[in-house]
Length: 378
Image 1 (cartoon, rainbow, N blue to C red):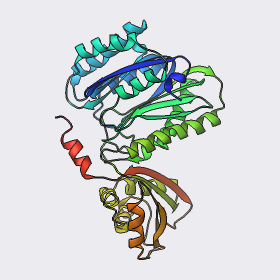
Image 2: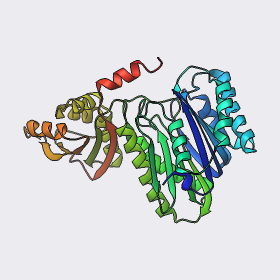
Image 3: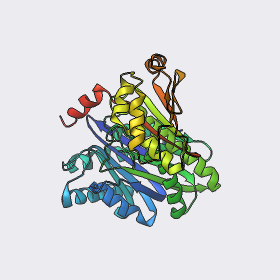
Image 4: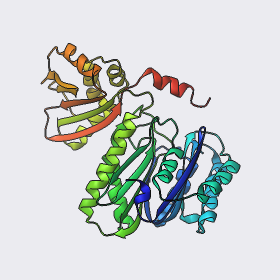
């Protein structure tokens, strides 16, 4: 199911080299969550201001340039993007949301954006092709398009994200559309829960972007029970988070870390995030090296309550226990084969301290990550 299958949503996009521009026409209610980086990109500042009244008529997004660390001029450029879209849609500038992604510290090419916006909007529509055009337009180093949906209730999301990904909230743009009708306060609480359980559990490289933006937009066409909607929204966001982890720049393996037996849920999440974010764990998994000592070290500095009574198992194309209640089991040769034959890895950790459970997502760290990020602005 594409975002265009949500009644009242029209979109289109264009991608030329590293530059892209996408537009969505979508009258309804809107809420959002944004980066916690203290250096916030101009579109984040403008977008959070524009959606504060909970109303939206449309969305304009560019890729290839983050419009971050660009001062007052960057703010004016973000506002000009909104004015361009508003003029095309016949609405107020205030009712347009804006987002950008790409290189930090460079001014936008506003002439290019103005020219392409007219072209994109002139061919806006609700077909699968229109949805794919928009999805491609917002990508940067992504290797594949990221989409997820629920048919009942109707929820459809599209996202970009591959590098500069860290918990709180991952470097990403994600636009979620639904026909379910709620007021903006309810939408925000449900989005926050979904983000906390998905994007805030994700780490590719430990870097936090200046541009993170997740918007939830409702066209308000149907009544849905909140519990049902929350469950499906959580699933959609978690699916997107897993796709971003799989597409981590240069990644070859998805890593899922599940922690049980923690003092409480908070401790379990701390422990899981520490392991998923550890560069040493990531590189070990890339090299098919079952170095569980790196997992132990990450647990030790995680801030969670731990001691040496820890159990660790590795799951993938097979399952093997590495440590049982603090005792190494010398199963490294079996574990290496599991790693070699798996592109999705699950580390299952029991802290034996209580009943708390939590999880985090990540990916391995490869030579290709260094190559991609050493050539990003060239």
